[in-house]
Image 1 (cartoon, rainbow, N blue to C red):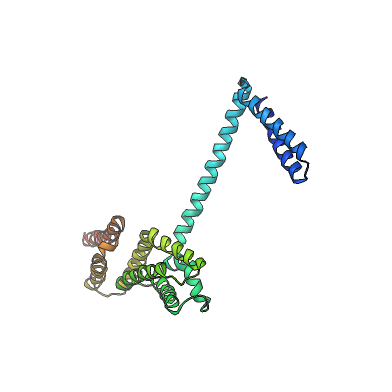
Image 2: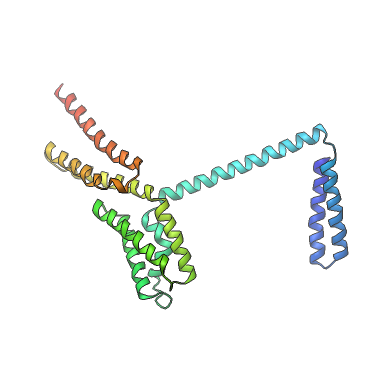
Length: 245
């Protein structure tokens, strides 16, 4: 009964809106009054067990739909983050350089956009820690310069904020991708070495070249490269011991 009353009240509200649009003001007002009365009747009407059951079922289904939608949104967000690179994070901004909107952007700001475009591409592909971290700092510097610029159009200014958020918020994700990419290249190079000493030198070079940038890395990424390094020597030692035995 309660669901039926609220359903009728809702229909009256919709019908009143249609009446107002069609300029049937008096009819619309009557329908609004009816819907308000039905609403209060629904509020103060004692609920039967059947009403309570229907309401509980409705709320359960509503919560399940919200939960499914939330999970779907979280999955989409996770997929987006997984595919996100420094270059893609800067795309909302660097597209203005690619489109060469010289008439809307000053030469200094255009130069910053060019550097951001180049640096985003380099950060997403380089295998050199010195280049990666120096370019990342360069990106932050030019984002800050654009943020302080007084000549940028409002649309580009908004894209500066979006790009700055992406670059700072997902830094750990970018660093993790770089570490894995760099590690894979080191492993491939070490396999081409003819001696164990040559292979170990490549692995040690990986460790020392990353270690000097510890202050730029999160704790989890510091643990990551340390684990990759230690795992290599553990597995290598185990293989050697197995071969000797």
